[in-house]
Image (tube, helix red, strand yellow):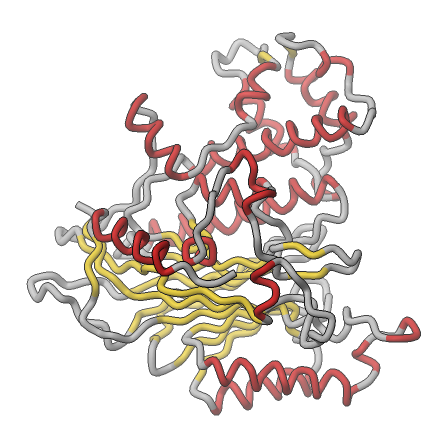
Length: 447
């Protein structure tokens, strides 16, 4: 898919109308995310793992580093980084360090062997804080959060002092092995957003742009995508390559792919999300509960379409139920029990509180259908204007009303064939494509 100049121009026009203005520096911030396929997971002929053959994995990772260093991205976020191997670790530390990067590594819990690596250019960023988020779930997933200050960007308006800070997040969500993993992926994203909110609330300047990178193991069809959209995040690649984005037909509107999984399926799962400070969004907990209910609704539709059996209580349209009946229905669906990636007791209690709107101990099942429909961030904004619903909005504690933000200038996937929905058979660097986004720093007038 070629880059749409008209689409990019429209994006810039829209953002200017929302109170954006360019900073004086012509420099851009580039960000690359790449799942590099840990050698312990890469299968080769004879049922062996690549990790058994040092020459193979060493050569492949040398080529990966060659490509990364040629890109010279400001930010590099890697997933499935083989943290446990000293030689591979040293290779990345040496070459990225020599190229001027500050490097942060984080292993998955329970000695899984792989993890995350985030690297930022020292001549572009000062790292103010670094945090590691351990999900402590059945998938042993983790996330890295960097609070950075940008160098060399000066305000166009000399009377204001723009806070040149941002948050960078790198993560890798669980693969959807079965239906319960869809709920676990939502829980993982919720933990990240909860942590970001808690961290931001403690910062002197709360209105910080957020760049959220990684392998999300889910496409635009999924509820993780819709959950992030409801929180104001936009997919940077889709901003740079606009096409009909009808959430009711998300499968039809995603043209690109970024992964060929172990089942041989190709799909688009790698994202660089952007959230600018001015974005209105629904309360986080409410969005999460709606996302869980949306996943339950999708699951029920799938069961019905495949001729499966659903709990009897859920067949009664417009019927009412108590909390114990609700829990029993969810238990029969097999999606309760945090140990196996299902809903926790706390999730169930929160969902019940959301459904039992009048607190009489009885909930109307028809609410599940209504709550399962998530709106996009734009729809949320329009709806809030119409009905006065509560929204969250990050605001500066200083009086300037000006914050740092980013405009998506360009986004590319490599190899190029994946932008057209094709997977090249001669591509051997990884089972994921490499995604790079170029951002232009801008002032956002939040007042």
